[in-house]
Length: 269
Ligand code: PGA
Image 1 (cartoon, rainbow, N blue to C red):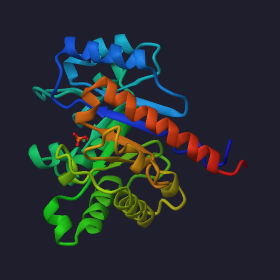
Image 2: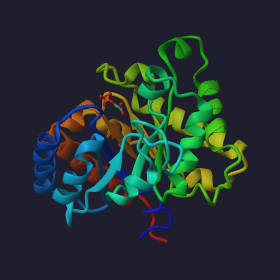
Image 3: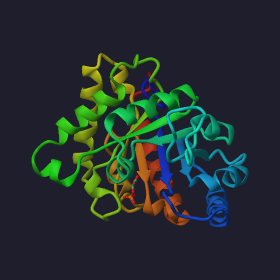
Image 4: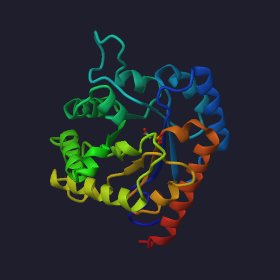
């Protein structure tokens, strides 16, 4: 086994968004369990809140990880309609998506709130998947790296790198989410480099190199290989395609192939 692998393991995360009743979610989880997860690859599913518990029961023993799509900053209290990290941990969640662009741009979550949610996730023993990404207008005006640097600094600034170890970052250009218009592998790789530069600026040093970074935005079984061929990209955050078990299984199978290729290329040391 190489020195650098499996330091940054392959992760394919499915974000089901506001789709699937509990009954539908159970059927999808069963199909994913039947398909299985190849070695050197991790699969995460993030169903809507009402489906977490039944999906947890279906996935038991499958190796497929359970995650949530959002959390509140406080552990409990008078916050009608909200769900805390402690509640998510209690139903078997290991990870939680933080700062998804649909929450940043559709539900008013700003950088400061994303930072508080990241800390809440760590406090409640959840691995946060922190989403960052530029809008089309920001990209077209040449601000992409500045936006990523700002989002990274706002979310991770003030956190001791060691305490943030185990977090995952997802680079999700807003214009690529749900549009069928994905970034190129080279572009996603360049943006992952920009994100790691942002972490180094916060004093992370070599830990920035070990930071897992996913690409998200119109990922399919057909295009995921392009992203995972990039050494800077460690996995994928998948929305629409993750709703179909066959497609999700196809993405994970591709991820396993690229994991094996990376293993084969890395000198044993
Ligand atoms: P998409 O969504 O794969 O449907 O573009 C990605 C996401 O929102 O994480």
